[in-house]
Length: 99
Length: 164
Image (cartoon, rainbow over all chains, first blue to last red; front, side, top):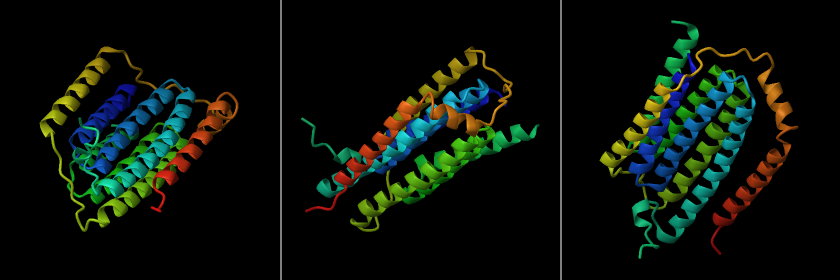
């Protein structure tokens, strides 16, 4: 399979993740969509690294994976905190900053 | 059809199907389980791309770590309000239009550029090469990453600490 096949797969995965981010109402559901999008980007990076025979792209993927884990841990901690204060994790109900 | 093509199509179909289930299923807990499946299949795609080390990292950090954290978050936030674990979606038409437009744009771009079809031979052990480059050329970002993870850990602990 050529590079184009992997990039197409990643593009479809990214679009599915974006659809999830837009349509989900639960904050945790939105985070899951973001995970899918980041995953698509990782596939792109690894595919480019492999088809250029250059491991630097794979190292970049290593960094994005680690940073994503930190991001998810913080995002879910914020979700738990918001839930304690507002008793809801539905994103539409979190409108404290609305003027 | 070669073995590699069959592997790619099988993994790709499974990945896209599980990803669709992540964004479409009503039950949030099932959604997380499908996410675990799609992250595991992604590790398989990394294997198909000769990145064994990244496949292991993907399984350990994503499929192991992230899914566990998300399950914890669901248990903490949903159990307290009863058995309401279902979730609804909104703006489905907007979501379809935006993600469809993005997909068409990216695929249109991909059709226009020449992309390599054959993989160049690697010549070296990928895991060994990653280790060597990571601890020589990229040692500073590597150490910064450790600091970032520490800060993230402390921040998460601070936010989720028990109420006084």
